[in-house]
Length: 384
Image 1 (tube, one colour):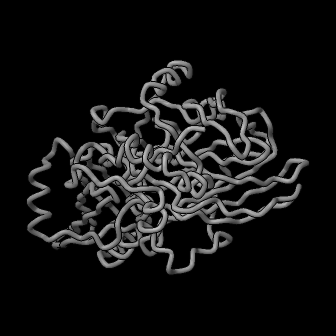
Image 2 (tube, rainbow, N blue to C red):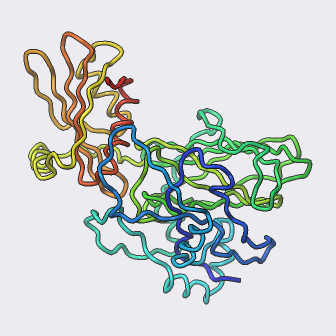
Image 3 (cartoon, rainbow, N blue to C red):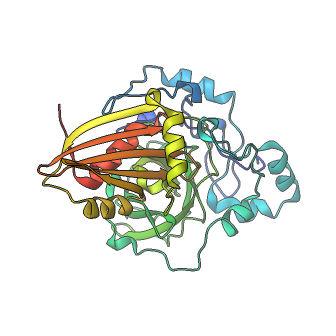
């Protein structure tokens, strides 16, 4: 079989409503057993180069007319060997595989080339699962998390078989990212042999542990949580709106592919407030070329204290504020898990519900995502 590599196959842009034929174009996946090969076509899509990350209008969307076959051929040139999380222990036992992984794999790369850390040290799979995620506190109960149906029971897997239903949610709490899953067996057979894999993505999200699910009898369902670490499976492509994570789940029935939507706040670090002077300098250096403005209406007149609390819940930190005769201006800063900074000015009308949002970032692709997060946090309705 193929030796393990530090990274997995490259994914490119896939919309939230990607169909099974669009995402699961995995016609060449080998038949799975205790020892199996994973062809490069396992997860295939086209990666968008960082240079394509240009400023977008809020609410704009992009289309991708390139054929599936063209995506497959393009991805073949850059694919590396891959593995499922449940195979890590077996692969680590082979010295040859470990050496090949260190020499062949690409280390995490910074989105849009803006990180201060030019060449992160490559990590073995053991370091990734043991050192990068703090498992000292208990995981959040997946039963209390609102999930989205991401895989219907009648949606076929790679081999055309149906019967697995999945609801999922990607959350962040207390500095920890978690993927919450509800797995329902709608087939006539018992499901087992569980494994999970993420595609490369703009924030390098990767599973930090195996998919732990007991044998699932026909008609049964199970709740599970997978800890997630950032900065591992970097796609080196700018994020798109809406954000989503491409996931594959392996069972003895088939391999099922789906996308999990998530908010930008999931990949924003807590307590990332900047010094006032640093904020001012960054704001001026970025300039209007990398700026997005939005006029919106709030449900009611907003106080600075309430807005600050709502933004903090989305991991957006207050830097400073000032008051004028007719409005209050609040200045916020947010930093992603790969150290990209977004700055914002929120102006609140004192005797009304008007809100003006101005955002700036060197990573222009983050501007519409950040705007959407703020609008959701403050329940803003954009004005036409």
